[in-house]
Length: 103
Image (cartoon, rainbow, N blue to C red; front, side):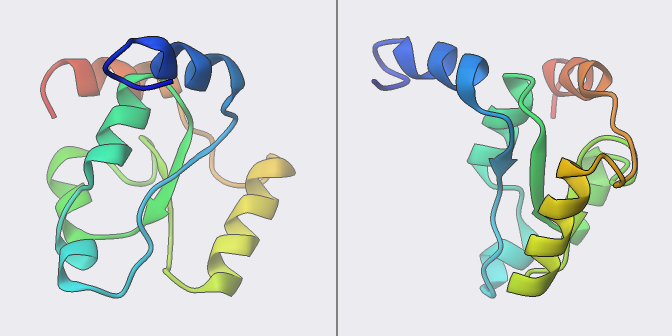
């Protein structure tokens, strides 16, 4: 499956409950919005990624997607809260609309 043959997006939409963004400790991770985050959001897949100032330019990070600090404990805690539905709610349709309008 690949994006090129068109099979991967459909598979991800049907089978992916949570997309994980980028959590590295590089300057790029700290300052950019990775393509995989934009792609996941454009497919309407709930997404968790590290907080970065770049996200603030395009999203309300407490309404449009889930973020956490880039540490194993913070990531595990966020995933557990997502599973227990105790992390702040996100309107994924609203986020999808925002991405389609031009992030």
